[in-house]
Image 1: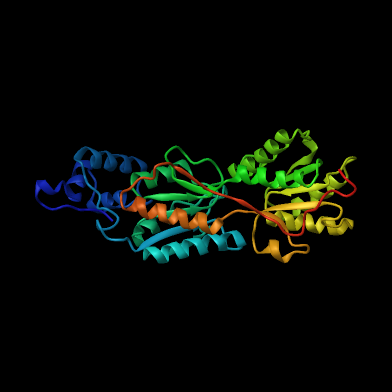
Image 2: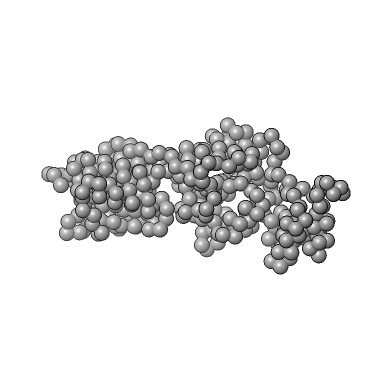
Length: 349
């Protein structure tokens, strides 16, 4: 994916000239240009400096004026309804744009959950014009590699705050937390607990912040024992539900920050013989298909995952054509979907 140039000086230096300047072979220089891993760090440094010094121009990822044919979608996994919604949104938007999509489902991850550099070599080899990421995080070196090779990319619902300048698309998590909590407060609940995801992850912390804001606006006292973090794990949410029910002053309503965790909450309530919504109200977050299947059907905050993914793909296409979005963060609206899992507190709160 490089422009090797011609013999004329007007066309810029050839790869052979760069290789000679750096004191390496042409194949080695080509490996550096194409982001291959099998190059020693010192050799990579010399070649990179020669590229910059000589003004070597990399060939664009696609011909000007033509729609590129291939993009990559890197997802954390394919075993959840969330991943299915993301795939659906990308697929529809890619069809509209005349693109094909290569999906990598958490392949070649390191212990930290980050993808290894091996997939970057594959990305270059197949000539993808851009990348959508829907996974935990990238390492600083991976961000740097993408920027160095001028490969446009967009983060879908990133877990952590991306570096400055990185384009991302997500949902209005803070507002979703406000909406869920206000719904319960409006029904008359004052003892409202929250079962959140991860403490330091962007979407999860924003939902809890929305919960806190809604309580504060209503003049309802916040209770530290009512805030639990289950890491988006169904089994852990189940355990936290039991703990909340065992409190001297248990909550009458639960805001659960994902529908998957709400399944664990439902399981715990069934084990205790606590009826929903007669004895306790439950609100989820995501509006996955599971929310409609449980009994009673779950009131939840709809996170527009398919629309988020489609928006990310459309932004990526613009970036592949040389445009730059006006802002780096795009957030789509959430909304409450009322079903049968919420009601006023029993006998008044």
